[in-house]
Length: 547
Ligand code: NAP
Image 1: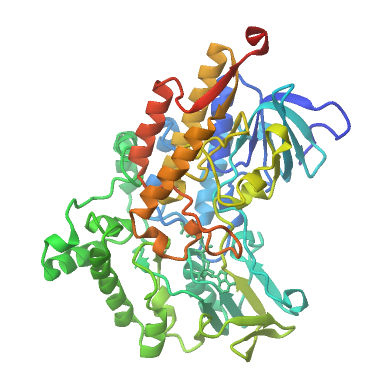
Image 2: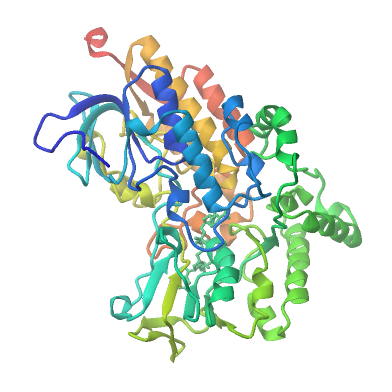
């Protein structure tokens, strides 16, 4: 249990760094800080490590990056002593892995669990951050590292009447730890993104009746999950680090077989043959089939047509198949889903699909909900409605930088961050996988390691050179934000109403938040910035040197 650091009102305990969040980012950050002999405390709202994976316990929760690639790449010992059991790891297995890492690296003693950071305030005189929590902790730190995750602020839509609903309701991203038994129940699932697509087949197996409320039909690829065969993971261990080093310099942080050819440079039959081959291999390697799927509407249309034909081939009822077929955005411009039996589930007589676009949800009633003028009755409602992605976890904390300026206000027209690492006016605050970095467009653990290592090396540099603070230069930040937008606008990505664009949260500015220029290019840019004396960053030396 949390013992607290310091009750408010007393002098704050001083540490070198506060880390917010004990997911993959915060755990690795803590490990590196401790290796340097720096004092650090991690605040974590959950009662265990895990971050996003701690909260997303809905039925079917599973990572859609292959397990062998979904682990830390900084330690040979860690990877050699761990065994994955399936091609894609389940949420419980990822939690076991994170427990294993926390135990092996003895991380827990510096993590304050069940403690949510409420504010972080920068003091220009002391050049330190004061971080406060909901348990009365007040800590003063030179560095504040936000390892808060991109998909951690759950978004429950503001639908009138929810508080009057007599049944149970859940959000996939805040799932009860004891699990939920839907046996014999009439269940509604709202939302058909990755979480809904994974949860729906399993909820359908239990529920007596399941109604799916779909606003946007999504492209989903078959995962073809399977148990790893005896020795399969063992065999991959010898080459794991070498493979990871290569993956770090690929666009998505994964050694997918990339075909450097346009879909338009081959005949339609050849294109479909390539897609067919990749389809049955399963997973996101499908995206590497051609080099212009994300930028050329005609290539994209060909791929979209192929994927649409697969839906028609699985779903028996033509009307349901038509409704499940994405038509309003190019393939891959919303986050692709990976599924196991998603479309097949709609062939079950107990599963129904409601088009929320045509029949919007009007209100929730004590018995269920009203959509398109019709009342549906349920025992349980599941919100698979996603997250206030990339910014929500940060803007929900009262963060005050120089002059008391609030980060939330600064980002009110869209997040502004140099390299997704530091936002000007918030010295010594780093964001791991922040907006403007590739983060969610890559295998996120590869992106996380790159950020954590860059931040650590930057702090090493500062300490060695007697530098007290780092801040982003406004011009460099503006140029980077412009570049992030320009690169996105050269692709088809902004054409979709995606959470990448903030489109899922009413009132959120429509800005493409992650960096779509590739993890490889981004990494080179970050390395070059560091090599160039941290170009675009402003340092302030330690006070006695400056005065
Ligand atoms: P999401 O992709 O944002 O999907 C939310 C769904 O809810 C969408 O279908 C959305 O419709 C719908 N929705 C939102 N508000 C609604 C409203 N008021 N009325 C009706 N429908 C509404 O969220 P998610 O599925 O939780 O996934 C978020 C991200 O987390 C994923 O894209 C992925 O990056 C990550 N994730 C990964 C995995 C994995 O690795 N396997 C699993 C789960 C999640 P619209 O599309 O029309 O907005």
